Length: 219
Image (cartoon, rainbow, N blue to C red; front, side, top):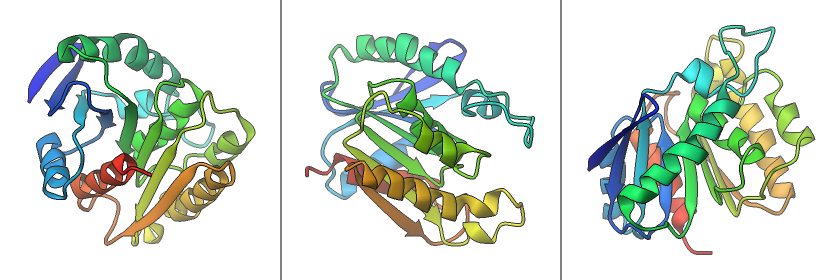
């Protein structure tokens, strides 16, 4: 693993083959564990770029809402930094252009992963684990706006206990995820929606690893 520092963000790079698909991941507990879990399961080569020091309430939130004013809606600006500044620096460090770009995220970063598809066409596959699709108005945003590029594959998952959350917003995550997955499936995108044992923050690395492995499978 090596580290890059850019725009006040720290990027951890785990590279097996510089020309292999690049998986950009936000909100991963341990990138090394994710790579090792994928390797042990026989996953094909990929490079994992874990981005640290993000301001979730700003960088990962798609827009401001009256209901939850702590979220400043800076995801569009952050997406520009990611694609225009971070990815070129990652490619420079790798010394090769990856054959594909995937975007993975957990919680608010899962929300961002889907939102980014409406801002850029660089990512061909999306992994959204326990994505915060309860975010006010996001289901409507997804269905009423146009994708820059229709992705090849989209992976969704939630914990079975997440719908039991006390917070009135959080407990809608399963229903909202199911609705979003059905919508993208109706666009003839290859999708899957998996359930995991436990609540929101259980086995973060394992859930992300399963999503990455599914996205990298041929066919």
